[in-house]
Image 1 (cartoon, rainbow, N blue to C red):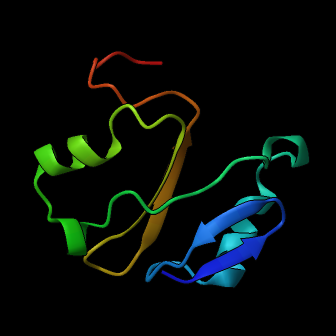
Image 2: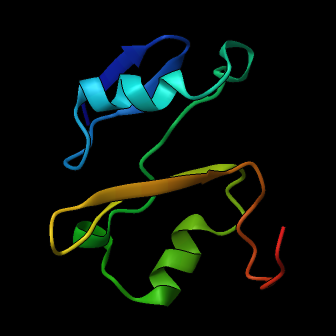
Length: 91
């Protein structure tokens, strides 16, 4: 998969966000917190939409940036510095 160098991070290309949007997302992180690597670890259109597949791909992978596109075409997402672990606890 094609890699894009952006600041101190390695970003894997996405069919949801382009390079301008990636730079916009990166701008929300403090400069001293940009020392991490983003990997595309789950892609519903490729991996399937089952919750169990999501759990296998995403749980226990560390901090996670989630970017999604709704069936209506809206883009949204979120970030957690915590591990997805299925504990169902508010953090």
